[in-house]
Image (cartoon, rainbow, N blue to C red; front, side):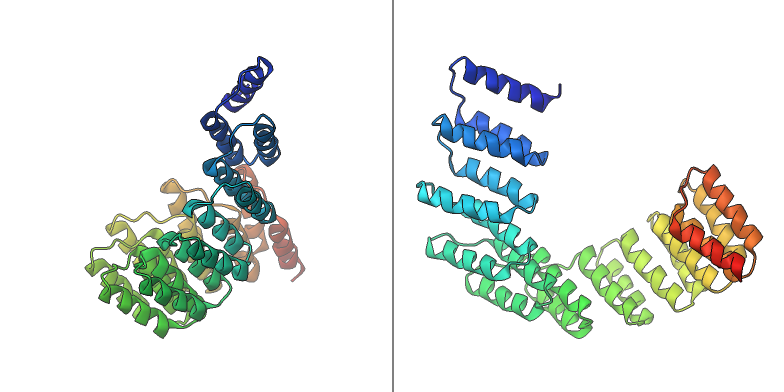
Length: 350
């Protein structure tokens, strides 16, 4: 019996003996059940507390609502909000923020905006988290301009957008391919004293790479370093991928060497990207060499690594080597998938 099960058992024994658990104890247990995703048990406990006449305060309601929202049961959370208001329990900032977040994640932006308006009408001032949640929701819907209007509203209410708020919109513009607008927003961040972080730069680098503007992407990464920020493995992987797509394998390899010199460890994604780049050029010797390098550095090739190599050798008409690689996969405990078999069959039929 685990700790949570023991706690449930003790609570039931208390009740059977006629003892009344307090609100704090019940809320703690409710929170644990919600975190485990055991919403049926959480709901049963919540209802039991009501039946026993235990006061279900705003913290208990919000805890249960948060659990429901995380399990994407937003409609139930909405009903619970109505129930608490009818029962005379006033929702607080966290209650509203929880439900706003749930609605945004479900793409119910109209309802989320109405809820924020309701907050304001009740005298509760939305904080940077509540606004950032709305901003994120609009950006995910591709409504980046609406997100920008929200930032203006935040500022007019005296709430300063933080780096997370700005990064969300920068990401939105990048996804739309609006590099100029993304860059302008970063300039605005800086002018308002909000420092761009690794995430900000990584998104811009990614956008430039997708546009094939590798020169600017590298320049931006060096700007990032000059500002005292250390590029992450994700930043480097984005650039490596960009150069591989351009067929610039020498530059991609140089970047990996730079990663080592700056103390950034390449991961499986880094190597898989390079392997794919060399395979597409028919340079199987370098591709295989990379696998040995991966292993020597303590990284385990995965099914993607091997599928890329199998495809590369099949493209070169070397099905014998492709077959050996499939055997090697099995010996390393890596399960082949449909792609492995389809690739090999295609190679044998050529």
